[in-house]
Image 1 (cartoon, helix red, strand yellow):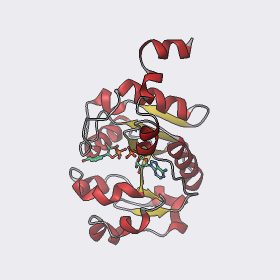
Image 2: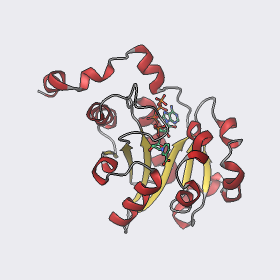
Image 3: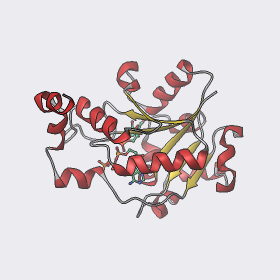
Image 4: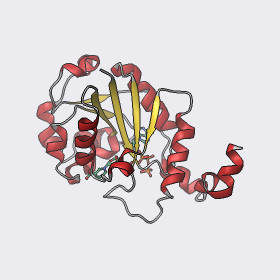
Length: 204
Ligand SMILES: Nc1ncnc2c1ncn2[C@@H]1O[C@H](COP(=O)(O)OP(=O)(O)OP(=O)(O)O)[C@@H](O)[C@H]1O
Ligand SMILES: O=C(O)c1ccc[n+]([C@@H]2O[C@H](COP(=O)([O-])O)[C@@H](O)[C@H]2O)c1
């Protein structure tokens, strides 16, 4: 049995924040691996401004290099877009492994808009990762009205495989202020580095 953290994201582009929180979560939760599930398209985000899938995947591979982070195109392969469907498919395909869903505190505000989010919460434990500026809004989020009944103390975090879902806790890791929004503002054409002839030049 492997213990695996799942970090779903747009990775538009992947950045040092993703890498840092994944490595810190690995240590805090005793994970064997973290899988970055590169989303073909977040159902709640506009397609406009989303770089091509291959570029996002390539940026994630570069950022994850040399670690136990595995970059996965599972959602593209399985044809799933909603996390509840992705988790069902992953659990079917890897019945002997244990999974925990990792998400930054900023995503909790919209969690009540995710498809069948209560059902999703009953499928795997959830670790909410500290993100500067988002912790208080996360605790006050709409979904927390229900999820708060299932909050676990951080002191039990390493024993998450003993828990039955729903189970959620707030993981305080060294904060990292990096965001893809900011990186896109600095370099709107970041994806060119990972596409077409540039990509071939880089890898040769
Ligand atoms: N610096 C960070 N600290 C904590 N969590 C983060 C950080 N960056 C990203 N995450 C989390 O990683 C997951 C994937 O994030 P995503 O690919 O959307 O990056 P992002 O920087 O949040 O992008 P954008 O600014 O475009 O929304 C989400 O759960 C997000 O909350
Ligand atoms: O399942 C849903 O309804 C749903 C709605 C919004 C976001 N998600 C997932 O949330 C993860 C984070 O997305 P993002 O774009 O904020 O990086 C990613 O795995 C998305 O597929 C999932």
